[in-house]
Amino acid sequence: MHETTLLLIEVGALLLVLSLLGRLAGRFGISPIPLYLLAGLAVGHGGFFPLDASHDFFEVGAEIGVILLLAMLGLEYSPTELVRNLRQARVAGLLDGALNALPGAAFALLLGWGPVAAVTLAGVTWVSSSGVVAKVLRDLRRLGNRETPVILSVLVIEDLAMAFYLPVLSALVIGQGLLQGATTVVIAVSVVLVILLAALRFGKVLSRLFPANSPEPLLLGVLGLTMLVAGLADQASVSAAVGAFLVGIAISGQVAHNATVVLAPLRDLFATVFFVFFGIATDPADLVPALLPALALAIITMGTKTLSGYLAAKRAGIGVPGRWRTGFALTPRGEFSIVIAGLAGGVEPRLAPLATAYVLITVVSGPLLARIPDSAWFKTAVRNRRIAAESRSESLSA
Image 1 (cartoon, rainbow, N blue to C red):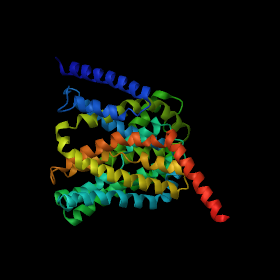
Image 2: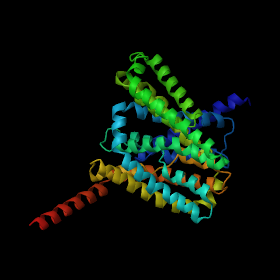
Image 3: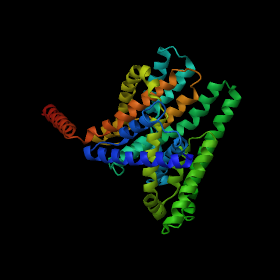
Image 4: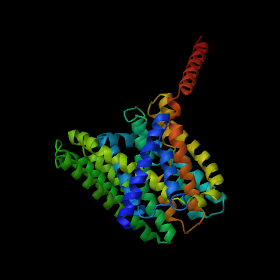
């Protein structure tokens, strides 16, 4: 059979299955992300129905999915809102890094993997998945919630920190000298600053380039610019996701609103492809010996991530339910964690399977945890605790 024909058959069949899984998830009121991951595992290397012809399609589609998720998150906020949120969340970002990176580093050292592996695993456990968190917020209709800017601020701080972290890790892995490693970091940080300054100073000018009321040119222009900047950022050792997010921030007004409308179907398609490819790229046989240590690490760091998110929301003046929503929403790790583990795979061969199992556990459980604050029993527990606290306060005052 011709390869193109086989690709069409594989992609078409899998998309139909994903449609059914999405409908099933909607019927039971759960996030479809875990089902998409399981579908990817079933058709990946070592799965029940391995797909060969469409592998490259899903790999490229996954990259586009992350870019679109972050670009459309950026479209929700203006440059001034971004700067204000970053200033307000800088302490929360430092706390987030300390609480979540240190357990990963300590875990690697306890396993006897050495300092480079410790730096690597620290990054794996530190960074939340912007793609998964963005989809969870959208699926649960929380983009307008008071705690959402706090969540996005933490994500942006983490993504921007990767501009420093990834070049440093690359230098450690390949044994670069101090001067060469420092040069790589300076270039990466300079690119981020240039993109951010362009977004702040020339955002309105940039928005005028696109016709707000012409859907086709608007779609092509915004999508083209987003992918171009994301690619240039990635070429400069900066996250493509950071570049895409800053493009979204730079576009404002009616152009941003209409771009959200025309890009939404593409985002949904390629975001689904991202989660499926994550499963496709994972060999189930490699996960078995890593499951128990990955589960232990996931329990520890989902707890620390929930704590750091809770404290960040508390500092921002968010109520108790919103604090829990913030903490639980940030628990999934994803695309960055896999990239980080891949960079140092040659340093410690057991690190990549552990990171993959860890990410799968957090990606499956994170969206489920994010729904807990919306449950009736949780709301009742929070209300009863508040009433009890008020009663104690009245008793003390009396």
